[in-house]
Image 1 (cartoon, one colour):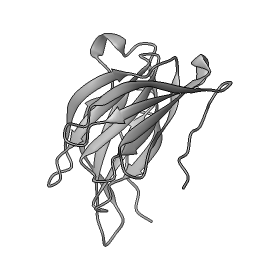
Image 2 (image 1 turned 180 degrees about the horizontal axis):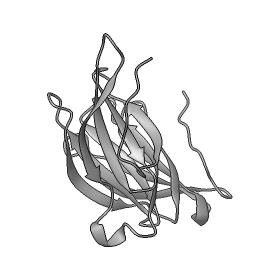
Image 3 (image 1 turned 180 degrees about the vertical axis):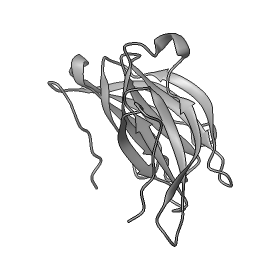
Image 4 (image 1 turned 30 degrees about the horizontal axis):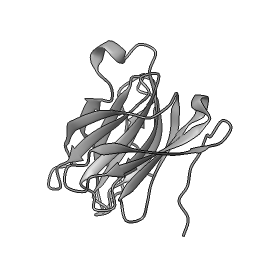
Length: 165
């Protein structure tokens, strides 16, 4: 069995596999970072390529990252920030797996615990646990940016949101 390590104290919480199968991405809860890793097809070993902050420096204290999602085309990565109450948006270099910050989008409530992308990638849902609402965002496929649609689902303490056909 292959083992891989992340920075001590990172607190890996959720992982997303790139649709191409060569990269994996980890949302680190405790140090508010997101890591990209190369996946070796033969051994299954993961090797860290890149680690980026998931929130601005001044927001790191009191923030705890939660979920991570990747767009169906593999070009953009989305991570939820509980505390900063945002969705971090990163572009993914398709050749190297490195990440580049696109935006920190307000999540439309407090404590975004879980995210879900529609199968088409046209919308992102954010389950805002302490706001009792699931916010619905339109996703720009070219830039990865999120725009609040003004639509939401009122529900008590949403902790998870899944899109089903």
